[in-house]
Length: 365
Image 1: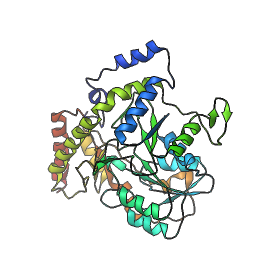
Image 2: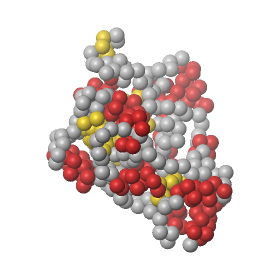
Image 3: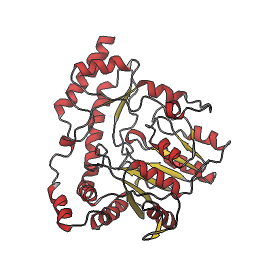
Image 4: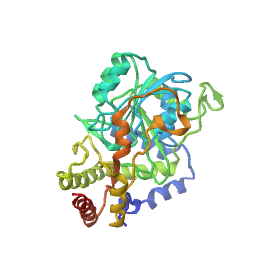
């Protein structure tokens, strides 16, 4: 069975023993030189002044919201097709999500929908998710939000290294959040995350909030603090992997390009960009009969998954009476399906995936 993602293949050839041994030999396992080194290297890579590592990507979103002063009863704009991660953070701080529809091509936050909402509301923040590795229309979104005096949080969990006009994901908004979950374009060997910003005061608040709200040891100055730290071993692994990120992203785009070329005449919706603004974290098709399609590929030994099947505003734990008109979002959640796409995916596996997809549509014709 061709996997949707394989850590063993994607990490092939990387020396993990040396950095892990370095940490073990140091006898320093939390908030040491590896974390400091990674934070400096990752902030330089993204092109921002400050990187604050945390325990995971969802912690990063929650701490970013708290860093901006978002709290109980505040409204936060976000999308409803991105796996509930942003919504989890919004609810965690006691805020209220305001869902807007997505662009029909990129499936990222629609600037038109945002502009309409900003004419009626003054939210405390906007969370923009660069979904599937596709950079959103972030310049226009930041312009609209800035005109309304609203800070923008970039959710870059799926978009490490995506760039446009020389600027990288995570360097456009007021603050940005990253996940280093093992399947991410830059993945650790466990959980990990980071917050990045050019705002020194905001960075200082985030550093306090990630460690209990301390101003100094055992002196709690800020409410809403937590214990969220990237450990030394994960930081050491990320330092080894970071120099490979751009090359791995090119490999992902290469697989996506082969798929797009092969599927161009099938009449299905494909990723609409193959440029540097897309790092192919996921290769997502939109098909009419998703269950039948997935079953056909499974029979041909090709794994698939759905990212994501239930829009946030329809999740049973948080159903409200608030109506949201999100037709593009809801249609996407009914039709999206992900194919294997990761660095190191063998050529013969790519061809097998292509053959399986083409065979399905030939049978359906």
